Amino acid sequence: MASVTATEQSRKNVEFIFKNLLAGGVAGMCSKTAVAPLDRIKILLQAHSIHYKHLGVFSGLKHIVKKESFFALYKGNGAQMVRIFPYAATQFTAFEVYKKYLGKALGTNLPIKHADKFIAGAAAGVTAVTLTYPLDTIRARLAFQVTGEHRYNGIVHTAVSIFRTEGGLRALYRGFVPTLMGMVPYAGFSFYCFEMLKFVCMKYAPGITCKKCDRNTGGLVLCVPAKLLCGGFAGAVAQSFSYPLDVTRRRMQLAMMNPETAKFGSMGMWKTLSIIYNENGIMRGLYRGMSINYLRAIPMVAVSFSTYEVLKQALKLDTGMKI
Image 1 (cartoon, rainbow, N blue to C red):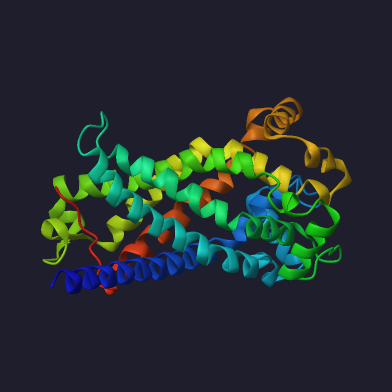
Image 2 (tube, rainbow, N blue to C red):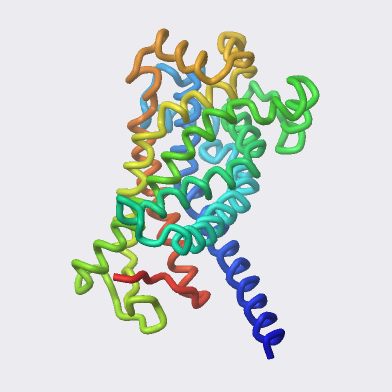
């Protein structure tokens, strides 16, 4: 009887992991596709493309369509989809696993309510980015290209070219350290803020933000508009903390694309940060493109969390919490 119970539990665990991987991967693809044009102009502005560095967000988007084409707004999105499905699937699933075991291990001894969600979120982000980082480098290179000045012809060609000419696997992981350091506050605050706001909605405003759902813990499920609001706020907070390290990562990833920025290719994170600050300051350097980042991060995280929770509900997974 015990073996049957163990087998059944094992099957449930596998099913839980598979459903979370599916929900997380699809959520990531939906959120990134929704903001792909803003993602591309952000990369062009962050790395000071000679064609776009003098433009703003909306003038830059118009210039892309005029100079290249409408579909150029989605340049690099194919590589993004190849990266984002395993990335988001791993991140959301890892968060669920870490949250489950951290909750048991830490209990209620933490000084900050739901702090285990921050730790679980940060660990999940680090896990996901470690496994998928080379695809992010490839996607950034493809998105940075301007029509008529192409160096790469697709995902595989980009990967092979970087590997052969820029130093092997190390080149594909250029900018990895600032990404890891930025991922801790970004993923940590994203999950922490979403879970905390979800808790506040369910506890203090269930009549406005929730619907009844007997199979969920607490008997409630967050309505879609409330999911979007919680996710959007979480994205804004997370990006505010992690953005300078995102700029540093992009400079390091794209260093070899332009002779003027090649100096960043052989430098470490702190040296790159220092040069960006000394040459361009805080707002024009470390926080360059921040306005567009809010425009993209808020809807992106909102769509990501909302889609994930809706898919979890469709797959009959628990999206409630103890209140």
